[in-house]
Length: 197
Image (tube, rainbow, N blue to C red):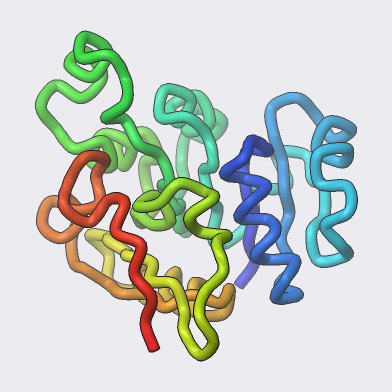
């Protein structure tokens, strides 16, 4: 499996840091170009490589570490996402109510985002905590829990395996409309900072 991260804000760089810490190769890209990426990831180590966005989209598992409103812009970079697993780390509930209504029309944000990457298998993960929560120290012998949801069991399992390799304790919670609803912002599992021993 190959991995990439689209976005070099706090979410993207935090995720890149976990890849670096565990020596798992990952390509990182943004819409501002290769030099902007290189300066953003400077110091993260050899596992984290700057990439043109077109090359980053060739990875098997792609983290969309962008704002919810920008997810559709990245989705438009390809007309067919077949064969790709896209990890949705966005949250929409902190948008103004009128924007939420316009963008979601009563649906969950991950259901909307899945439509924006035709052919891909969307997995919701790494969104239940702020980035400082993900990087906080964990007691010896413990792993921070990451909840994972997808309508595709194979994609969920692949992201769960990667999540474990990144140093976390993955818990798969089922399909987007079921368990995945619980990790949509403002719902029951958001901000639950759990450690598994």
